[in-house]
Image (tube, rainbow, N blue to C red; front, top):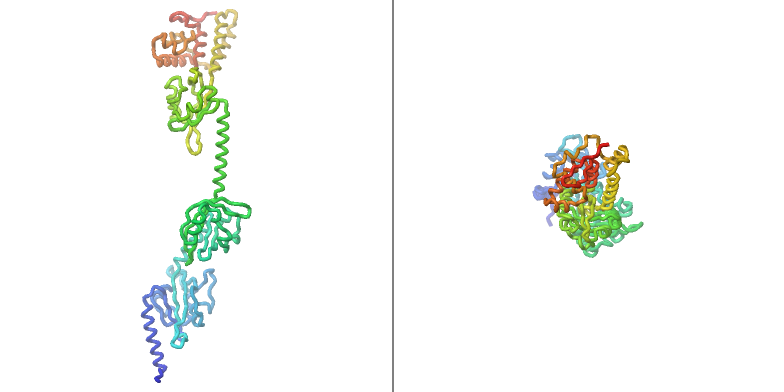
Length: 508
């Protein structure tokens, strides 16, 4: 039996080592060969680059040299002591996997030598008898991966949106952010380490079975409503799940939306709308609710039916021009223009027609409001027919007294005139001479109690002509209504009796 001499053993080891070096030289991972007697004997280009060096001697030939050149720290920033370095552990016969450390060159402040995160694997290459012939350090650069995980951890912790992370391998929670703790009132210990069976966020989900199947298979869980079971009651949420990886572990990121603020807002909105509906229905003034666009009637209150005589179904659904309440089409169009221009108006004087063909003098006011996110117009109608009638009757009574003022002092007459026109200014007053013959004629017919329609028939002119003349009379007389114009004429002794009569006031 032939025996191998020691020189032949050494030669064989060198051949084997060269073959191993040729195999691993081009690998992407860093490889360092460590001999039990000779120390660090070889490293590939990747290993040198990970240490930011270009030549093997810069690694050092022994574990002591390596420790003198490079500083290694655990992820908690605690430095590795002698005996804890990967090279030390290999030479001590300790094989290991996934030792992650931060590495930096000592005595160097260059950017290239900034700290990087490396993962070491160490194992022995046995000889034919099973004894360690040499050792191998496999080095993986995980700097970018760790940086990405750190960025994710910071973003996850700072995100105000409630979130949980569940590890899929055992369905236990491994991360929880402050947003979730604030929403639920739980502590970190109440959640971390517990399984989805103990704290089931999908327990009351709308599509629970499908969600659980997606969780077990690591698929996206779409948004769905659920009710979290908490010690002090339930919490209504919207929950969704997104598969992610943390390190090499597959996980599920659960995100939540707290439904409580939205429900409170919805309750407040509903209560507000209920209060509005009650007020709308019970107010004693005729009121309409219409859309902002086209002014299509949505509802009318009880007072509208009581005053104007139209039942809700007779007006709801109609646009403003289609309503039967206008004495003439121009009134409805005028209201449309005012709302279109300003969105609201105050005390627009219009005549409205009831279902029983009675004409009412009214003040119309509108306001644009929002109901369930839609712009609407609230129209309030104030019936002033009786008030105007009372004014006319009062004026007629005053006029009857003033037919013979011989027993009434000038002071009393002036006070009566002031009561009839309280807003008169100190500017010079207009007289009858300032009116045109046609205006005098129309003023005379007004003083005799004729309506616009009757004046149109008597003079054979159009309604617009009569309205325009009356408007000019108002401006010249500085009055705002028909009664005021009649009083203004009677103060000047003009009663309209006799064709074109312009009787001057008596002098006292």
